[in-house]
Image (cartoon, rainbow, N blue to C red; front, side):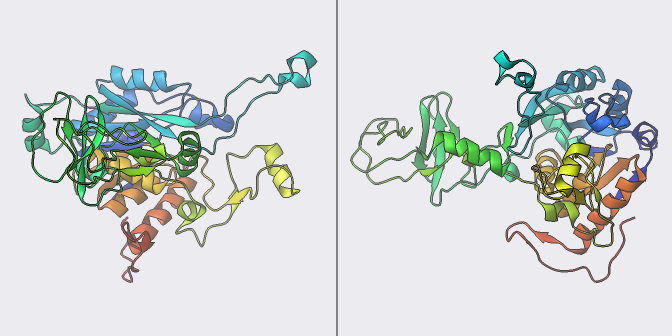
Length: 394
């Protein structure tokens, strides 16, 4: 565990070639956010070249980006030598529209504005080229190159059945080792759905569920012909014959297909008991004054962790786990207030973080230390013990 204070381009040069297993980061988006000097542009190609140098062959890079400047981020990462493998979309419901009401000045344009409500951030998914001839050889040589599918599956409601997908739909099949027979068919693990390239927060998930309503998949009842479901289900037994017993599908809103993390006040401020509350750096002067006088939508303009773009720890852990071998080292060259490092500790990974702002690195250090001192049980969703030795990681 190493936290480095300074410009990431300088600090990256101090790291060895092929020394980290993954890079998961939330860099500047190049939006001139709140007039911040550090957000004047997306990271340079030179920075991404250094990232590729320290990453092991086959290692993955996951980098958040802004919706308006994603193309600049992706192009610079690609020009640095990375292979663009996919784009993951993080969808959230808490964004506030920064739209100018044209109708205030031009009456006949009442109801017209200038911007949409921000509701997603794309994540560049890139990979350093393999050094070996095959992906298997690369994994054997470096431990990198693949994606941890099973530990990133989305839990489902199935208890004693396996899901099955085919070119004709989604359904349930009894447990067993029957190989796939139909074109396009894929056997699924009963522990959950295959991870997708879209992620919802809880609020966005609720909005989606309101639109889709309750959906059922794979409901097959005894007596039906195989390939025929009930109601509006997408059952497909295939192969002809009659269903000999009921096969219950799962049901719920469409958000159940995706992972749903959410940032909380507790998550943001854990470990910062001794820190002074400061004005949240993403709140405008007008909203700040409104909050102090009891007006507007801003409830509390102060926070001990005043970083403007804190990501949920659970989200960062999900991303780290997706592309990092067990016990491997993940790097965040734009660490901010330390959410990636906090997630790495929670998941049992080693971590290297770089941050140029001394205030933020102090916050990151405290948050990561708290996670180390107070292990989190993911299954129970609670802290399970306190590290009374208080061994410092730095």
